[in-house]
Image (cartoon, rainbow, N blue to C red; front, side, top):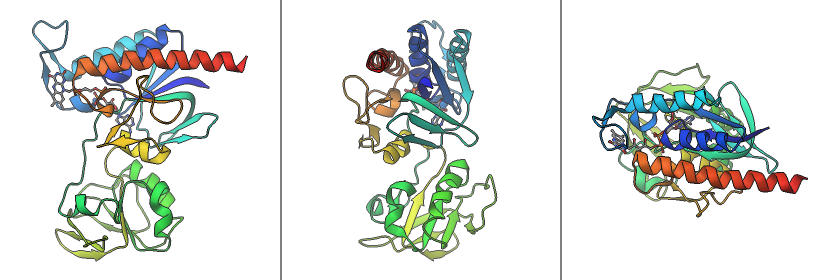
Length: 288
Ligand SMILES: Cc1cc2nc3c(=O)[nH]c(=O)nc-3n(C[C@H](O)[C@H](O)[C@H](O)COP(=O)(O)OP(=O)(O)OC[C@H]3O[C@@H](n4cnc5c(N)ncnc54)[C@H](O)[C@@H]3O)c2cc1C
């Protein structure tokens, strides 16, 4: 079993990996893209680069440094984390990995669906987690917003609840076919007074009892909802040891909020690694 799986290969995730590796821990980093620095941006306030550095180049340098130390860095999207009490199960579209501890360093969510009615009806018919809230919508008319592996993952859970499912792709191409009705035009409004009653798109109106959002890449908030970790204003809540309220589940970087800067993300990664190392050593002692 892996000592620590780090989700995210940005400043927080890679720094944590480097420290954990040097503490002689067995660590795997799983990341999908360049995170906050996916779009070209010059970084001029990070230590050690007199004339600045391209954001992607900085992140790529970190990944190369980690690999140079013998750390595995996989290019995959994590779609689910489960806490089995004995270990954490981290799921990607094609693999499952078991770990004693997990560090969420997934940065900030970048694909909210902020249209009319969204804020008002969130939690009143709009949900972000089929496993968490699906039970309340058995045999109801449900909409699922998404288009990729994350959506497909939620869909497989939703199909256990109801047959009446419509997928809204928000103009994106489905990455795999689905056997349900598909609407491709964008949602412009979530309708309902006290509870959600439907959805309006650019070209139509639809009645629903519930809407589940699984758009883009699963974020720290999506993982938190699933495992029961506490969120505050979409930031994962951690204690002074960077541990969430779930034993063995840690978080660092933009995912925990505060100052959203690279230096702070690296600092978080280092501190989280130190506390994870202590936790792993405690686990080792207990198992003897
Ligand atoms: C346009 C822009 C300009 C900026 N300029 C500066 C600057 O000049 N100076 C500065 O200090 N800061 C700057 N920042 C902020 C800085 O980029 C962030 O604070 C920093 O990148 C946070 O690091 P992180 O490791 O927490 O998250 P990120 O760098 O966002 O990394 C998140 C990682 O998580 C991965 N990930 C997310 N979800 C999943 C998933 N489900 N499965 C697998 N992997 C996943 C991503 O692929 C990525 O590897 C800027 C941000 C933006 C958006």
